[in-house]
Length: 388
Image 1 (cartoon, rainbow, N blue to C red):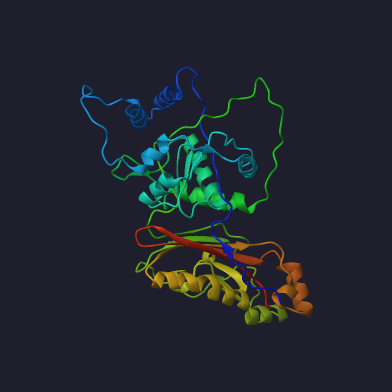
Image 2: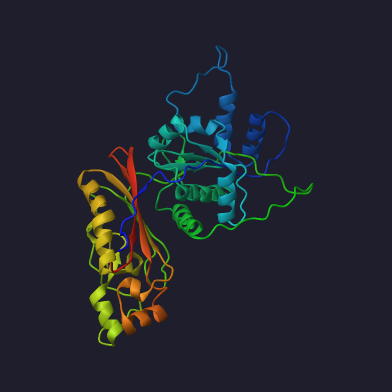
């Protein structure tokens, strides 16, 4: 009998960082070069902040230091550190050869406080990636590295939060793109990049820069997002769930076109008895049953295990008054009819016609916050889609 739950520590692999834009010149101090770069990009607000940082206040300057400045500004003025070389190599491979040599990661106490201050597990500004409590896993890093690439291309969505920061919303297109891309690159095998000898004509590596927007993972607002369909079935769901703000869900009402129609033979009878359209986001957590995005084919055993493992924990924390960031990924490969519990001709039919349309397992994870957005803990589960 195969174990149905594999529980892992949410902390995952720790991340360090790098990303950027082309340098404009080499004259002057690093601060002067950064100031020139930002001014050439039209980033007047950040240029002004850097100029203020360099300014020495005295009795003759006519103004004093800023009061109660956001910790985010303090972090973005610090150098951070590059991505560890093995991690950088892996991520550049996952991103198809992107150059992350300029990315700078921040994980110290001030960085974590700044993330909490803006209600984020992690955030990115320019090529600076700040990893707060619960944000040091590789999926989150991939999400933030997507933001680095987005900001290299130009302006990104954001709303002024009143402290001089333009902050993203989980509903904006850039956040949805970042989450979908993180899901894609972390699901694919690592593409090993060739290591060419340095060339005198090779382009310069990008230089670290501070952007005019802050893109963050967690924002303290309810949302649900889904991945692309796989053969007409749900593949991915991520949600931020808040107590007292859970909409009504519904039971499953739709099936993919390939699902055997009732009364058409032994395989259809087996599906009716042993398979269900399982929610990625549980019905009692607001998950709809009328969209294929939120439904994936599960054995009744797999669906029950998902309910009693991950979903029960999410419901418990919501009932306790906590905020839960909840993620479920359906991992597709090639199942076997025998593994699903079928026998004889039905098992053979599944092997021949349905093996790649049914997920092998679900990978579920939660990150729990208190009502103030402070990180409490995280957990993850693997739920095998089997009969046993």
